[in-house]
Amino acid sequence: MAIPPPGFCWSFPVTSFALYASSYGQGRTRYAELQRWTLGE
Image 1 (cartoon, rainbow, N blue to C red):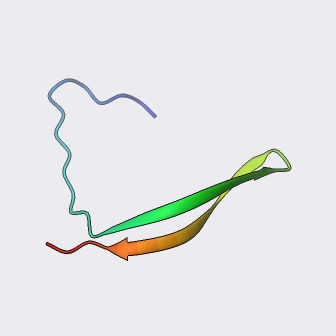
Image 2: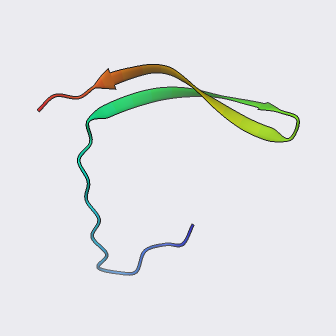
């Protein structure tokens, strides 16, 4: 992933937060969602 150029502005609404656990096996890292929270205003 490339680093954005100076002055780059990227915004998007954040509606939830998730906690993930990672596990490594057979040369791959897998991610499993443990819990998700909806964010209010």
